[in-house]
Length: 576
Image (cartoon, rainbow, N blue to C red; front, side, top):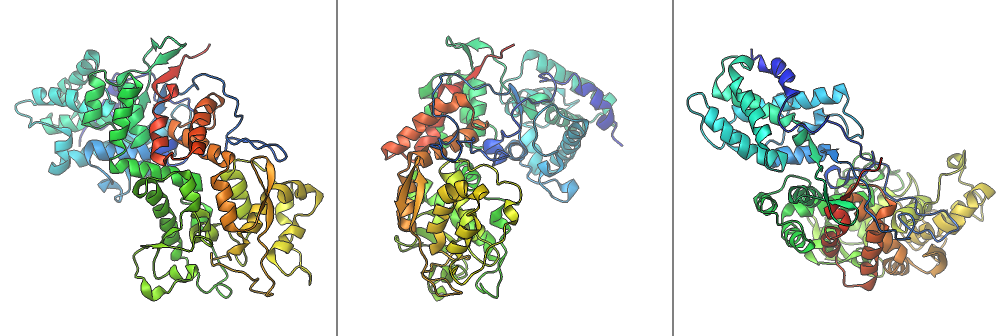
């Protein structure tokens, strides 16, 4: 049995690349591109009902650089992608072929617990053994064939692999410490063979703080009271923001040549990187965050009374989510569109199962999603797609409250606050005069504790969306009573109640809303910069929002501009 798996833990204390402890002081809501969604939402507490509801916090722009962790740990999603791109490993053969991060602690802030550290070591052991046992994977680590004692080949591996793993060249001291691991090979492995020592060496890299953490420790003054990031730190920010993984060879080369210090140099790399499929995945990840779409959300938990809605089947849930994601991808990459088109596009992706929900003949479709153009009066934008409409409905009826809260809070950035105690238990009233769901919900929320938020903010946009039933079909009359559906409401947009006549009217007004535009920009800043609505990001948010308002500004333009702000290439000086 190998002895290095226990003995080398002592050596790990002195391993190459150590940067303090394997800790992290970033905001627990900070996850961003690698982690798919900052926890706790990123609406930034944009205001309270009755105010203007400035999304993402105050619009007041105070120049400055928001503080960030100097030793942010890789999120679990970033860890998986990094291992994939570094070593070609996507699943752990020794643990039921699960993704590596499945065995790690959940993403969290603060110093690493003993249990969390143990998980990193266990996963590193599995990866190292798997790589060295597979000739196809071994070549991603060893770029030479060890001969003799293997020291020369392993020395070259330390330099070449270490450059990629640490996202920077190793220092001479780090190389010497890893060389010392190789020299101790006979003592820390069973037989001291080059393959055993290589496995131990890979293990050491994978538990090094400089691999697990994205350190930003350069202290070069930028002349404006902050520290300028090194080219290698900028390269890491670029790759993890745009791809959620390590830099590629072109980006590493630019960093090694010091060619990532100016906005123009960063711009050139960002434009190149957006053409990579991994950027498409990152943009999709942001839109899942924007939509609150993912596991354990409303999107994957819908249930319906199938006696009332026989068209509903839970097997449709992933199809409806995929359709929504396809729309966002289509607007961003195929169309080169902007935020406005997300609200206005009549494009949909439909198959035989979802066609009836759109009033289309299923005989014209197969099992694969097919691009179609829907009626732009009935189906403009993502909020009129069956994915959103199903996710934000109740078991046996629509839910103006759920739909209205999403539009108010997530689209317009107005935080309606927490419901008062007992509000969620308020029964839906019955009565001969309450012949529509709208009337029943209006009566349900008429109490003094509820009316201010519901009647002024939440209910109106939800009432407009009553044109769609609980499975997303267009409706003009209440199914149970035959009463006509009333979609006219005064929706509070940009601080003022605005008369809205129909879903198409609402989508047009949302597309033109400065609040909706600023909220979208705020969420991008929170996601891309991996911090939740910091006041010192207001200048960046305001600038991006103004460009959206001006028109002709694409989603990919916005992503590029996120790399051009001073916040992207500098970090704040720590204050005592």
